Image: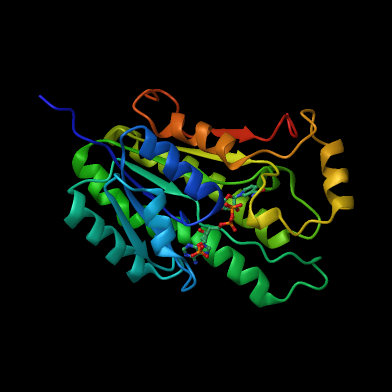
Length: 245
Ligand code: NAP
């Protein structure tokens, strides 16, 4: 009998870390639901990168709960199941606390933390029915250590860790495993505007003395989401070149 192909939903999969996670899963036989939000997304280009893979591209703003529910409903109608959820969509709006506007704080919390809540809550009932599921939420080392200029982002990423541990506890009996991956400094659009001086400062804090690549995060996410992971839940795996230990 042919093995059922696993199905993964990845938020913020149009660029950076999310896209690398999607590629890693595609290489390993997954069917994919790839979420994005921007009108400017070049879907034609993106489709080419996933030629030969059963892939559904779904536009949805993770800050909008009903859009998330619709996205998950469409995914279930197409594939019949969701084995893996990767909550990856995220933004930064950096500013020192004294200058940070309320909107800057709220927007980052809405996308990073509330978005994770919206998509997880939409997917969980289907995983419960399946009596299996893997959830990997993308946090950040900054959610553990804090970082000047990132009160909003650090709070959102710390919140994701608490949220993930709670999901791990509430749904372990349904064989749903939930973990976080906490990347350090990874080369993507999110970090491309850091000045050389800031980058030099960052390298001094990283034992491996370089920024990470999106692929290196994807490899860790892939393992936690895979069938090989049967006994790790509620954990935070740092992918940071040894930056925090
Ligand atoms: P990125 O290149 O800026 O990509 C962000 C992704 O999130 C894009 O696909 C974007 O979609 C999507 N997104 C943003 N707002 C969204 C919304 N409201 N609804 C749905 N999707 C939305 O960022 P990245 O560096 O790959 O980061 C991915 C994750 O890793 C984030 O959670 C980030 O916080 C985390 N992380 C990154 C680093 C790093 O150094 N890069 C370090 C630690 C943690 P569009 O393309 O449609 O805009």
